[in-house]
Image: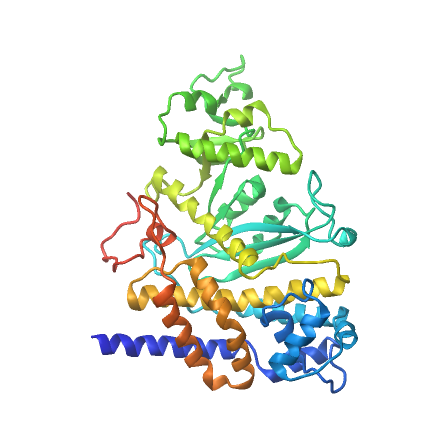
Length: 481
């Protein structure tokens, strides 16, 4: 049995290694360089080496000095270039070159054949999480990357990301100014929604039309409900005009969440099956309420004050009064998900925040100094290329750990391990493709040895919620409670 498992593991690693080889080749990179005008004639530094410098050498081209970049390039490739030569090559054509590689890699969906088996597969084909991350850049970039205002700096970059939880694919990425609105991005990707998709979004993406469109496409949504949105139920006391026509004003009765909240105990779930939200009452949905514990309320209050101060806004009395309750809307039937399961499933949205944490703390996407704007853009697209490849490797390692060892690997720990190997992985993909298998195998062995998740008591992990941790789920397990 052990020998059979080892053979299957090696087969899985080989398949993934072959998929990685399709991502980069010296010839393909050279072709993109010529298409974008980055390379017109033979140069000291080949196109693949520029990709290595901007993406995989663990230096930030917009944060480190030109001396450091030239020295790193020399140490890795043996090529000697001057500061001036390198600075001249980090130009608008280099930006176009890296952006084109990023866009091609994004379309490849490297982990498309890798999926986490889940007890909710019967109901949801994909679990799509949308969110954004932002970081400040030097004020001199404000005409290209204006900031979000408030107490923030005048210039900032915002990256929109849609992540598919079950396959690990980064579905949609958009780079824009810090002043860009989250709310409009959800509408831009409506056409990509398919039947059976489950959409998890935060309040920044709250949009009635998006929810209606998801339903029309036979998808599902779970979203937080804004505290200032009016909630109605159908009235039992309909009033009529003399001609027998019902008065529109009596068809619905407004309910007040604050009144319900007073009757709930800490940690309790409460549900209203059919409510209508907004003044136009266009969206009929299911409303789930969860009253926070004292500890949860304390954390939320502190975070709310911090965010309000950062954005230079003042919270309304109604918003402050409802901090102690979480409100969710969904079109998923009660027979499929109980109120508690809706609350737990929405918690999967936090996975994208973990991704953003790795982007900044491990891959340093936000580390930008005062340099020419082209260097900043080269770093931005270089880091996104790095993150696309790293994300695919990280996800594959975690699925192999579950599938072959029945172990759950930590997102943060695996990110650190992959970060240390990614330079070698890329270099061998270009120069020695046959070494890819052994490199991937080394990463996996390190993950099993050093990358396992430390579990906190009474706190469910992502794989706990999906029902894939530690044991093989029996065929008769039902997702609904």
